[in-house]
Image 1: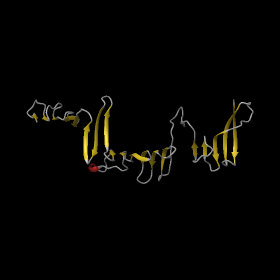
Image 2 (image 1 turned 180 degrees about the horizontal axis):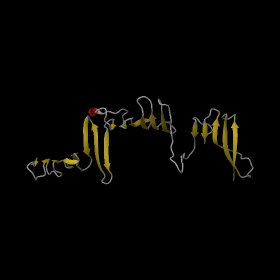
Image 3 (image 1 turned 90 degrees about the vertical axis):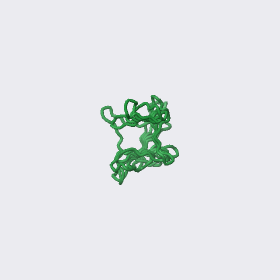
Image 4 (image 1 turned 180 degrees about the vertical axis):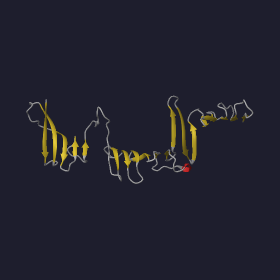
Length: 231
């Protein structure tokens, strides 16, 4: 089997220039019966690789991946746009061209990066480095305008912490206009100041101040001093 290449101008089909390949078993000088277009340059300048009808400046079609590789230097992909615009990478399927998206905006009030799943924005990192989940602007409450942090917004917003080696869970959330700080397992909650433990709420509900092993509902002190109180 031999591979033949064809370079041609397609005035009738797409008014463009194309490079195509074909195979034949009739000999190295034989003309293939059918060709597959590998690269097309249309009259409007659009370039297609794996497609004869590119819809954008560069349109790559077909199974497989694009590889950016340099054996001696860094490899990168740069999206450059005007100051008032942005750039994005879209993840499409047969029904939706932007069902998933990573977007960076340079315009007024911008310099943020957002992440879209199922055609809706889910997360954003603003120009100050704040992480917003379910929100598009950072709310700093009474901490002041220079505070930095994480906003989680939505119906019953929740932050869950899972310790993989013990399979234990703890959470912080809001439900029914009440703040919840809790655990999903029989584990305690420790309160520290100045990097020192001051209080501990045990998994059985006992609360200790100045002790790590409260034996009653409320215990102040560890039993070695005058401050020892139990309830």
